Image 1 (cartoon, one colour):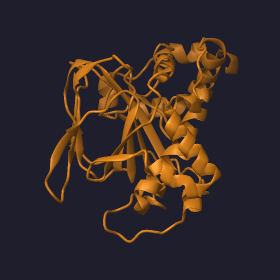
Image 2 (image 1 turned 30 degrees about the vertical axis):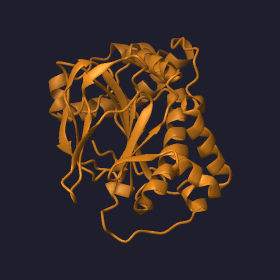
Image 3 (image 1 turned 90 degrees about the vertical axis):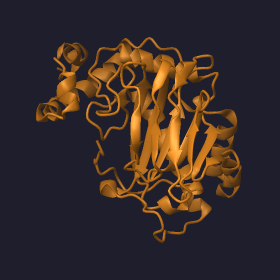
Image 4 (image 1 turned 180 degrees about the vertical axis):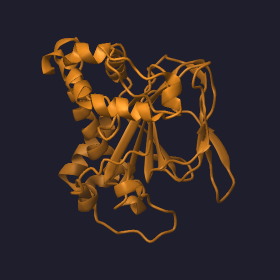
Length: 303
């Protein structure tokens, strides 16, 4: 079976859209029964059929951010250089240039090849079931198990998102040991918006993957401030990211023209525990912020 995993994976009948949206028990069974085959299929695809010449690695990050993050890992006292790159654009919401716009085409090309691979890939149910939607974390059913992407994903979550989250939001410490991620592609007349909600995360990072010149209309992210009742709709340029507590209410507005592609990444604690506003939090120093947690993955997935 190992040598035939790719052809077997492509031949397996997928659950229907309706079954996935309704979270029919047969859908969970489908992903569970075929997990090993799909993981092996992604390895075979990447080794023999991906035909990809780019690099899915740290060179994708914005140069200033990459240098600041690498310096902070070498010398945590330099973490202020990382913090200085983030601008507060709404109460509790920060923005920065996260990926290098000139390198985004490499990541997008890779994800397009993934979508064309014909290997079953689970979309984020209830958010987007279109071509660009996929689960990214290995705790999720039907996740993108391609080895090079998973190596990049681990760097993204462990070397960048977690220490940056701790730096901007000290209260998430201890509620940030678990990772979760998915991609979305917003398209007119399909999955066009997401109503007001909060996330089941301690902190959320939302990265725009649109390429320079890849225009779209609508699809801003509207944020709500509970304290002031202020509402602001934010849009972000190619490769930029917004980061905020998962408890901040927000919604994605309808897209009216073009497409918007993005990554949504979460951190939370064991069994889905999240940092609650106003609760006394653990104080740690810079060296502890720039370190990896010893807590293993608990396998819990919010959806």
